[in-house]
Length: 343
Image (cartoon, rainbow, N blue to C red; front, side, top):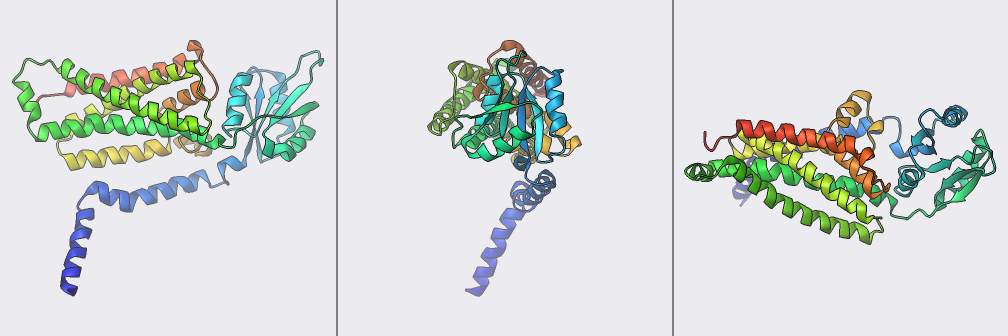
């Protein structure tokens, strides 16, 4: 019995260690997660530094005055919000601790300082430190605000994994089992084959997104109808980007185990550098700069803008959508150029 126990234990260990993806997930991923988490929390929890959003134009003197008055408070960070709707959306999602809305220039209307029900004491202290008097207003902030913050990130993670595995893993399997060789004997164009893969996966992912939206709605997440339409556009562009990347990987990787390892290796840093769990401002400068150019980061930011901030202006969303479109065009162009029916 002892010998059988040792043999089975050895076989199970070898099953894990012979697979690069399994070994990497068990041995390497915890180390990577610890290293990145240590960098994020090196100066304390990112959400310990309370964010005060000031609704003001970029060069407004009031913004500079508030930042100067609060410069001695290390626990308070002053940031600008483009409009009151965006600022309130970030307050409800717990991405900010307070919002300062300047009053009329003639002071007929005083400044308003908005805080959540649990931050009344913080609001009183902050109001006393501001350079101009402000009326303290307790805003209606939902208890599940952080769930609202996480939802776009969870959604993007689902789209990212679905896109990478839908094409990368599937194409390698098709190549190994000879299905691509059989298709090569037919008059089927490459574009039609790729289009069918995209259409099928898009339908599945949009259904998945609908289920996620319904689940988040149960937690009180606000979803404006126009925001849901924009979300569908964002999801399709993001899915095209990651499916294109999966196709590109499948064109150069020939074995199933290796493509799983590579996709897993790509997924971990994409999750950690895409503002899914914490803002990029919490990371060191070089990592934040890299994360800012990732398509997954842009997807998260766009999703939060349309769902949480109520943003619906095409002019505001256009730069992010253009970046996603460029990623999709580059990845698909590269994969179509490298795609072959068989080796």
